[in-house]
Amino acid sequence: MTDAPRLDGIHHVKLPVRDLERSLAWYNTRLGYEVEIEFREKGVLMGCALRHPNGGPMLALRLDPARAEAAAGFDYFAIGVPGKEEIDDLAERLVALGETHAGVHFATIGWILPELHDPDGHEVRFYTTSHHTEPGPDGLTVDDARESAERRERELT
Image (cartoon, rainbow, N blue to C red):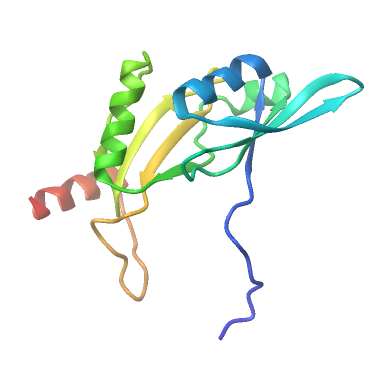
């Protein structure tokens, strides 16, 4: 038993953007997101809530150029992808659309697709929800994540 409060996943992730229309188009064409709710202030479109047709987390985009600039380059979240085949397919899709990224890599417990950047420079990462390694009952301590993942991959192959 625990006295931790009951939670139910992530409701949505909100990102500041410099150009709302440009970001909406990018998240739609690259990842399939669709506008579910528009937020207007004094008649001006200031933000949108986006839904994904195939299980992706809800995203919200908010027009806020200064914060978008400050947040550029940081990976605030990773979007889950079911498995290795799906993350490989996603990587290929993104390349076909002209996007650069670091490719699919063996990571601590699953596979990761890092270094995709949206029009504001936010790093959008993907990580498989199926794992090649499970943390033990006492958890998992990772020293030097990249090196330990590479070592573990060599052990498994």
